[in-house]
Image 1 (cartoon, rainbow, N blue to C red):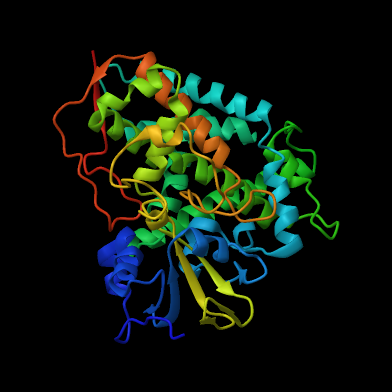
Image 2: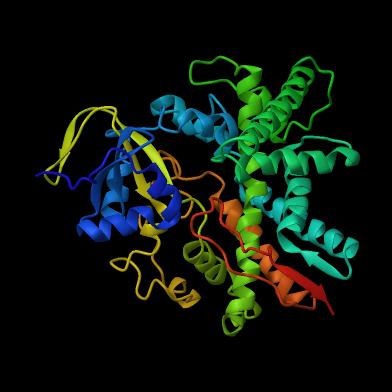
Length: 406
């Protein structure tokens, strides 16, 4: 069976123009869940849907190695990190991250986030620009949680460096180079810390990521290079700070859907924040490469072909979700989870797949933030531009959400 194919030489500009909607738009045009296109002069297979996600996260058929563009590796993920590994190496490295996601450690992060929100609101008693405030809160909490000790005078610089890595990862020109420079600087600081931990010059808490990653042995029993340790610590810090995007949309949802806030008030914050994660844009798609030739439902997949799964489109797929265009937290009250239908931060299984190791933490941080802003503080939303674009990555409300305290 011939796979539907976009005509023309290249469709990079269409991807940039349509953003989060690109794959779903063209899947609807072809009336197929799989189609072929060309992006940055390379053949690319695009997919959307639950069955397609299950295929995409089959580790026997797809590899993450060399899937992310070089510019993304040099800004967002870092080179040599867990996202680009496969097989036993990936499984072993992923376990290093998952060992931190215990109930005790997640509870500690919740307490840190609540404490930092209280401090941030106290320091901004008239109004709060939520997105910037969230980055401050999450940076401080993340540094403490990972055991990365910095002077308070350096905290603002860490906020800027970590933010650059995800805010400008896909940009071109000066913003991209700024993001790359921020990664180089942050990685350099962490490499120095790793050296000091290993040489017993820095008294690192042995229960924290800084120490545990510094001393980690790979699947061959060898210690990680200090550059890889730095990359992986940044793969904790950066995604935690990136939750600020979700927090801004969380506050937008409180503004736009006040009738649904009762879910939070009544102790059902999880359903509310799960709908925030489904409804609003976060990651547009995930990338992998075909490991070896295979055929699926009559479609031919050739070795090495870059393949994208539409995360946003799958979370809005009418074949999966009833009334996907509506904000309805109620859908999650009786929702039976699947690794392949609700995939805002990637799909598959946690233990053997590529599902984000920090997803539980994301949920906990959003839940803690939602309960704080609904139950602890009084505020209003001044007039502002709360529209957001579907071709900005990451997408955010134009004004960033602003609140004024009462």
